[in-house]
Image 1 (cartoon, rainbow, N blue to C red):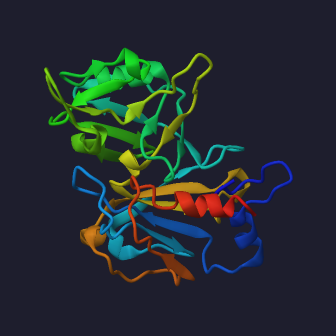
Image 2: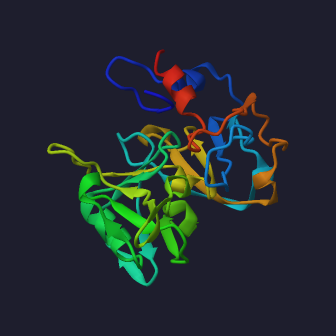
Length: 261
């Protein structure tokens, strides 16, 4: 179950328990993901931050823009739009699960083809099930919109730098815009992971719009976005700061732990 808010079968998610026991000053989680600027993972990276019961105002600037969760879905919101260079991606009816435990961006194959096909020099690989590889260096502008908030995705985030490999055509990196492979693999809703979320401050609010599973907020990163020390607003009960940055999935292990309850 991880950090879902709605109940699954007879199991009760940990966030429902936190809400019913009133242990948090606010029914909110604030998430900051530290970006790893190098081509390889670094054990000395300061990691990300989870604020239980509030947000860390030093991690972002401006207001938090919220989008209501889609009823009966786990932290899932409507995709308002996406643009790659001058190409507008068709997002009509698209829903996206916002998941900090996912590194990449998992989308239907037609969407992955549209995103990557709009990037100069992109190549598909039959050995990778048709998934895409991008030139590691580029400047194509990529953005995705939820509600009225637009997230700019740096090209070097979309082209996963830690996967760089030299070929006869140049140095290529695996694209983070992927689709599931295999004879029975399908995906209808989008799964938005850290390739997008590391570029914003994300708020999971399960105190507002609670009947439909809460709402998700986004804010632009502030000057404290690269700092390892910051104060918190909203009187949060605890802040967890992982010592390691593992593919930027800052609370995958915490979600797995909560899934045991």
